[in-house]
Length: 494
Image (cartoon, rainbow, N blue to C red; front, side, top):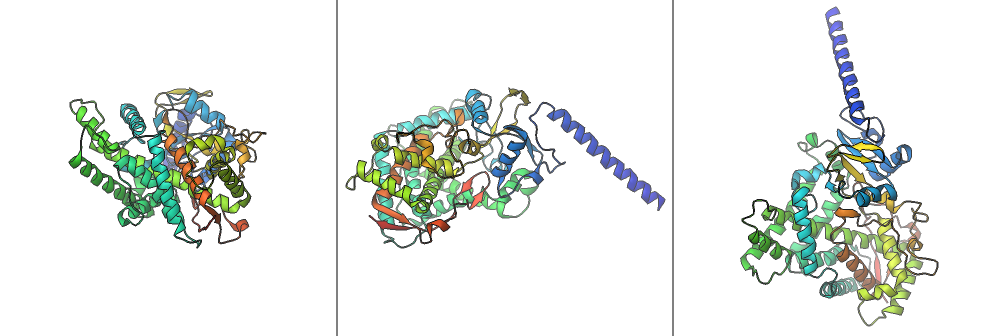
């Protein structure tokens, strides 16, 4: 018994010693880091963070520790920036050093740093420069692309008309319309609404967006070393990404068989031509793996960000019917009922323009932003951020900054209108992020939002099957992304 007691005492002493040494090491490592809650060994700050409302948890910690603070997601150290000023200072004023892509363990084990969104260093520079140039060549911001979007918007109108005012879930038709625009740019082809294969792709995109926002995925990101070997819902992401990967790989093979280097048809053709041009360059990042994953990133990101915003927007207009009425009055006055909307109409439609911005602000689709990382030891607001430190620039905290928006938790288009009713820019509007990692499809997304939004409201009045006051705007999931709630609407012809 005495021997057992001595052994227990010795073991307790060893554990106490280890905890003491771990805390001492932590204190030394974090002495120059921003303040934050004390982490537990291995668990980090998991007890201070909500698995269902991660963004709100981080904002609450920001109120306690200030606009720059440190948290531990498991053993992963993250510096968090809250509010417009801190986010701007990092992404714009110090954009070069904050320009690294931070870790997202769940996706990193799929993409391994390849593709335009998750790349770093020279790989990212080459892929981003090429992607921006190629999107411009295929019409981003030009009349040719506007015509494509307008045609797709009219196809959506006709698809909605088939519902004859009956309740329907708008997720698939909206997703199809936006995916078709991205498909035309990326793959050189649009798909019919009855195409079952393309419908399966849209389902995979929407499922992936949802799974990335679930508590299971957050746990997977906190404890990747363990979770990647365990069964569970977090592994559904692998299945969804495989669907997109196989689809893009098939399109690449089809393009290779019919490629005409003198006449590129789409993003894939342009990448294949670039691969051939640089095949003798050992430093080139233009190879099949980067091609497939960059196309996946553009197609997935471009489709779901815009379609999610539109889904949220139509839900908001069913709840706030007076705002919908004002938008339709402006559409009738500027556009009328006999021609399709055009981007040049936007300058004459300040209220509609303000409503679209407010939808983006309120829906707050990417509240945490995609993680950044500092590429060198960095002095920031009196703190030292070691090279490679992951940084969460809370875009949602800028979009809800009370110093820049009136009643930031309410839906109010006045946030983007001056006293004369003219459209007013707001520097804290960072729905597309800011700085060097800003969304490379911003121009395309703005054009899609305006043309699709106005086309639908030109032809239909959107009504809810339930009392507008009972409409719940709470996201279906709230993790790294906000997923709009599922609902049904009735589109009554005007």
